[in-house]
Image 1 (cartoon, rainbow, N blue to C red):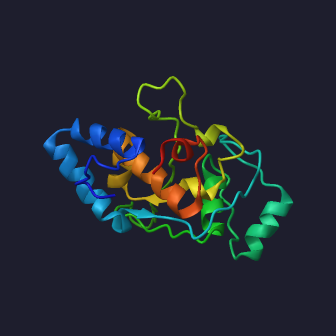
Image 2: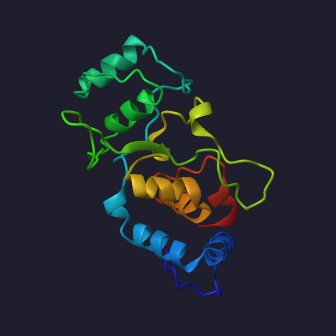
Length: 191
């Protein structure tokens, strides 16, 4: 999306994004613009959209069915992550997503970028709408749906957690790549 949009021909979606962006301070706009304009340095998408484990939602620990363990092993994923976001991480890996290493880490440990659910229950559209957006970790149709997952750099993760504009840019990109639109915003308002 061009940040120098013209009002003529803008969809309702573009109009709201533009208004939300304009309401931010100049320094916030600069940071968001820099991160989004360089999104390939901060956000990694899976190669395809798939649902690994229908019905599963977040839990402290997960016990995988043997059919899913077999599917992962067949793809070369032999170490299954049983922790809270583990099934989403496994789905992302199965969908050929790249998860870069973080620059920090305790000596001898390796930390990777977080896997972020872009539909995290935040930022209704349009703003102030009483209908909240999908919270993917609580919905078994979306917790392991890779169209709504990204590996995200900590700086971009903070932008997604804090800013309506950035979150909806991610969601629009998921729609463009995978036609992933669980709340129907892009079908209703355009993109």
